[in-house]
Image (tube, rainbow, N blue to C red):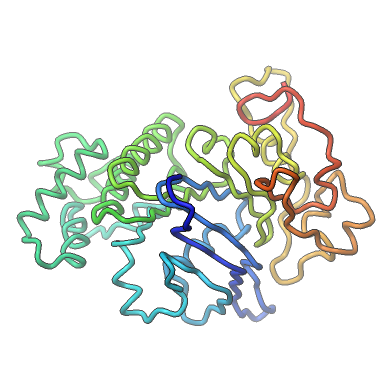
Amino acid sequence: MTSTTPLLDIRDLTVSFKTDDGLVRAVNGVDLQMFPGETLAVVGESGSGKSVSAMAVMGLLPSYTQIEGSVEFEGTDLLKLSTRAMRKLQGNEIAMIFQDPMTALNPVFTVGNQIIEGIRIHHPQISKQAARERTIELLALVGIPEPRQRVDNYPHEFSGGMRQRAMIALAIANEPKLLIADEPTTALDVTIQAQVLEVMRTAQEATGAAMMLITHDLGLVAGVADRVQVMYGGRVFEMSDTDTIFYRSRNPYTRGLMTSVPTAAARTDDRLSPIPGAPPSAINPPRGCVFRPRCQHAEDACYEEPPLLALDATGRHLSRCHFAEELPELGAQDELGRSA
């Protein structure tokens, strides 16, 4: 990181939805900072609030959503912007790679036309021919073969991996300062996942953008992220640099995520250690610590008071656990943090 001033500064973000069953609090008091050029991984199970937080940043939540807190981008609170002002930022200063490119891309327009439109909306002074040449360059950058011919293909003519590459090209077309990737490798096989992540790194280097990588898979971010933020039940549960999260985690939930994922280093007779139970209800969360019903370290205090997100002695490692400093040290670790 070359700057101490945050590019994105989220403070006490709360996102709620009214339903017939009650108020769903999908995000509950989240703080997050991102700096120019860095890669932050936001990790957690489905329902942890990862994608909803990103949608709040992008201004893509429905109008009936109740949003509190602040989301400052380069000092401007995005939650206070008008729809017109927000549209000037979407796809230009802040861009998103969506989870499913087949539904994110319009099936009745060619891939090239969709990228050209994205360029010319924000830069109307650019001619259609110049935008087309820029689009061909972008498709080549993300590894689309024969981009001059492929630019006129429709999304259904691309494979899953190629559609995801096209989504990356669309996202970086205007060289955004912040790139949000929401589960960008979902439903792709391991080989294609690695290729897509490499394309994202290349795109990030080409644009100098900061990148928020949203995923449920801690193993995916091991060699990609500078920092990792772990979310559970709409709250931040742990935050630090990647090495600290993987090798010196001080949170039972983070450790549970790591030990529940198979690794190439595991022996054939090794058994996975899944986290028992299910994520908490966003309408009626459990009393005390929301992870308490699934935590093997839970004690009386965990039933009474929700733990605070507290810094350790280094001042760089945040963990939400009453007994963060008392958890046993991690043993020798493989690449996903499981004891070898």
